[in-house]
Structures are given as structure tokens and as C-alpha cells.
Image 1 (tube, rainbow, N blue to C red):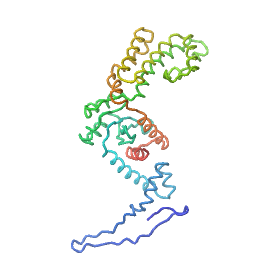
Image 2 (spheres, rainbow, N blue to C red):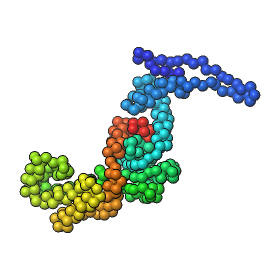
Image 3 (spheres, rainbow, N blue to C red):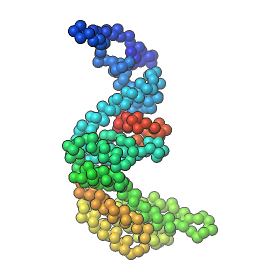
Image 4 (cartoon, rainbow, N blue to C red):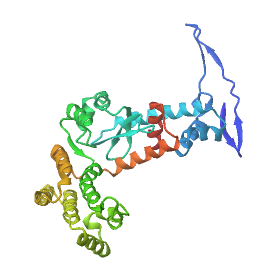
Length: 339
């Protein structure tokens, strides 16, 4: 039996394992021991799983001079126990996020406990059937405990949530909504920065360099940033109403309650009604399609999306470290172990 190394030297234990016979039935069996897991000791198995959290499976196997299949089998088995233990607990806020496991060719649905940030499962594919099958497997009692579901603007996820979690409030991921809001200002900025054909450079450098400053929330600006924006607005007046419109959309989340969010929405409607920013039409269409899920953010206790995004970033780092995955089970095992 392989054991932990001593002073950097590999150790092998010899176990005289007795074979026993049951006289009444004649069946034969070998004795077991709680200190052994297959062909390795239990403490070496724990060390292999622990090392697999900080390095690749291949690196952990080389470090302890064991096979890749042994380490991967231990990781998959341990991750199965971890996932089962996490899913056994009640979940009040459920986070749903889609991610890729290999250069966007294969996708999985990541299901996260929004209160703890732990990954509950990673099911293959990114469609309504994947999420619906997971919720059905948990049972009606577990689903009834879910009060809030946070996910991106996916119609497939929305169909599964309406079918299985109709009692819960569906809230859109705040990060995704802000991306929708910023798309309108980006379209205005790109139109303003264009110069006549044949001009060099082909775009206004001052407008281009201020692209990140324009996206910043109003409450994050200092005096120097505001002065820089005032100079930019004086040279390009159409940027001013676009910036004000984005600021009012940010006010949907900066407001203290639902009433304040509706007031910010009214101010945005007044700016859009002037006709100076037609590029925000797609933003308006997206808001009209998902207004209930966006405004429910205040009614559900303002659930944060930081844990969901943090988990997704960790999974993307894991994917890049392994140069992509081709096996769904291995990716799920590593994801559960990492979180």
C-alpha cells in the first residue's frame, strides 16, 4: 500500500491481509481496514485530494509518484460526496450561471448556493432541460425552500425557472443588466468619436480614451474626473444626455427602495423621450422584456451577484489552467473541489 512520503522518499506499506471463510454459507472474503482506500492509505488519499485543489491532477500525481487515474478517481469520488452534502442542505437563494469548458464549444450550467457561494452542481449543456432536470432531481420539498433565483437574461433558464420554481422570485444578474445599460452609451460614444472618411486618425482620441470614464457610476467620480467629463461634454454635447441616461439607469440599483428605482426610471424616460439618444432603443427593449426581473431586485432584499461571478471566474481560471476540459464529470469534480 502506498503511503505518505518520509523526508521526500516514497513509502510502501506491506499489509498481510487475511482471507476469511464463512463456514455456514461457504462464502470467502478478505478483511478490510479503515486506514486504507483501495491501493493507498487513507491519509495519502486525503493529501492527494488536497493537492489537487492547488495544482493540476497531473502535477499531484507526479509529486506523489502515483498514476493520473488514481488521483482523478479520488477527486471524482470526493467531489461526489461534497456535492451530495451541499445539495442535502436547504438553499434560499439559488444562482444559475452558464460557462464554457473548452473555448465556448462545450457549455455547462453552474448552479450555486447564493448564500454560501458553494457550487451545488455543474450539469452539461446550457438549456432549459439541463436546469429543469436538476431541479426535478432535488424534489419538490427542496425546490419549495428556494425563494430567490438569480441568473442572467437567458430565455431557456427563464422557462425552466417558471416551470419548476414558479413560487420563487426571479431576479436578473445585476452585472448582466449593467452591461445592457452600458451598450447604449457605447453606441453613442462610437458614433461621436468617428471622424470623416479619409481623416487621420480615423477617430477622436480624446473620446476613445474616456470610454472607461464614461462608464463609471456617478457616485464613483471625483472632482478631477468630473472636470475631465465637462471638457469632453463641451466638445461633444451629445455625450452629455447619454451619460445622464446611463446615470439614471445606474440609479435603479443605487436607490434605497423600489419607489426610488421607479423615480430613477421616470427620469431616464424623460431623457430618452427627447430623441437625442436613439441608440438606447435596444436597452429600452431589453428592459421592457425583463422589467419584472430587474425591479424585483429591491423586493428580494437586494441579493448580491458577487459570489456567483467570483465562482464563475474561479471556474474560468481552472479551465485555462487545464487548457480546457473534454469530460463533463471531470470538470464538475474539479469545480466542486475548488469551491
